[in-house]
Amino acid sequence: MAKKVLLVGCGNMGFAMLQGWLALQPSPEITVVEPAAPLRQRISDLAVSALASADDLAADYWPDIVVLAVKPQMFAGVLPDYARFAGPSTLFVSIAAGVTTATIAGLTRADAAIVRCMPNTPAAIGHGVMALYANGQVSAEQAEAAATLLAACGTVVAIEDEALMDAVTAVSGSGPAYVFHFIEALSEAARKVGLPDDLADLMALKTVEGAARLAATSDDAPGTLREKVTSPGGTTAAALGVLMGEGALSTLLGDAVEAARDRSVELGKSE
Ligand SMILES: NC(=O)C1=CN([C@@H]2O[C@H](COP(=O)(O)OP(=O)(O)OC[C@H]3O[C@@H](n4cnc5c(N)ncnc54)[C@H](O)[C@@H]3O)[C@@H](O)[C@H]2O)C=CC1
Ligand SMILES: O=C(O)[C@@H]1CCC=N1
Image (cartoon, rainbow, N blue to C red; front, side, top):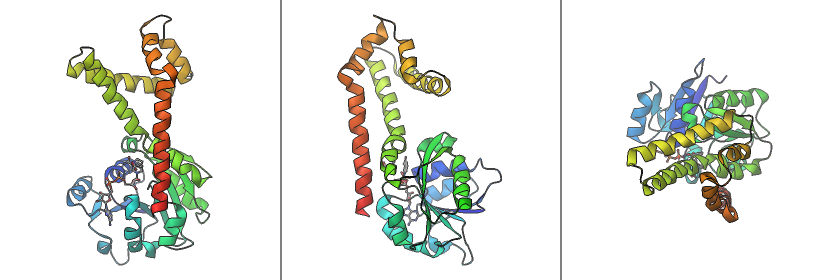
């Protein structure tokens, strides 16, 4: 287990992971660098040390793991502040979309130990799903330390091929936004057929929550669970005739995931 964790950037995703880490026992010593004062306040409210800049780190401070949670476009500007930690004793974990381990090594040290991780925001409640890719410099002990840290945020899956990260980003990294939008759209549809606002929101949210829990716990595949809802000639068949007609939803989702995957590839090239 890593003893000292330095989190660089504590916006939406960094804060979600920080919340997940608070459940760890034994808890590592976590230090956060976050320039935005209101965001530092919410970190301090969790009794976690929050600094405005890398310059505020004590001269003798040395982290076991540095988690990079700034925007991909900021890596070139931010990484030089942390490059001094790169080397065999410190693991860099990047959660940025697109940015490759080669780019991070180029901005820190050629032989830096780097894990790329693609998390998602349900990490905040321990229900994220995270793919990890470790470069050749990562020791078995460091890989285990990273997996332990990240497991506090949800399910961790190791992948061997870094190129898959763009597709993972498009599916699970961005995926919660698709599901949140589905909830919004179902709620809007509920209003259109006459449900009052509160009831529409509740029915949409609880339906998605219940269906996801059932899919996660049932021995049946999602397709079987779908069939079990669908009475021949009934209401569900009428709806699925629209949603699945000419692959409507799966075509749309396919296009959406491809667009996200392509953007991840682009973000990697712009670094
Ligand atoms: N939001 C999400 O659901 C996910 C985001 N990611 C990745 O996480 C990273 C962060 O994304 P978000 O949290 O959404 O962005 P965000 O904009 O909410 O957070 C980035 C944070 O970095 C801080 N920052 C800016 N300059 C800094 C510096 N010099 N030192 C330290 N912190 C600095 C900003 O003040 C901000 O709070 C991105 O690389 C993104 O690709 C990955 C998976 C999911
Ligand atoms: O939208 C983004 O670029 C980031 C990466 C995955 C989720 N949010």
